[in-house]
Length: 67
Image (cartoon, rainbow, N blue to C red; front, side, top):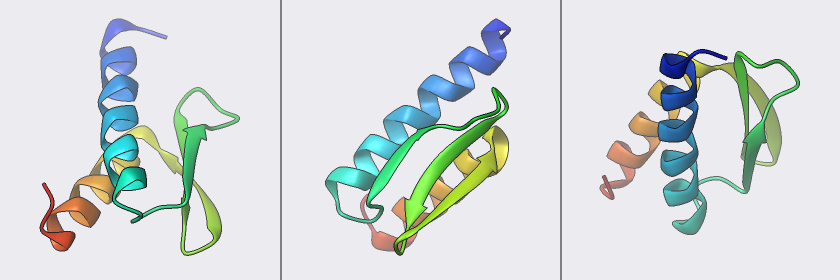
């Protein structure tokens, strides 16, 4: 994993932690693939590419008025 990918994964973890604490998602973690992140949203695990995971979480937090 290169440093850009590691920084992106760290950013996603922070966003996911914020979303989890606000009860917007019910879980999160590294995906099976290094290029994916798992987000449990509305009871369903979703395996998203890193860029898409960041976009999803950013939008979720923005729509909720938290971020």
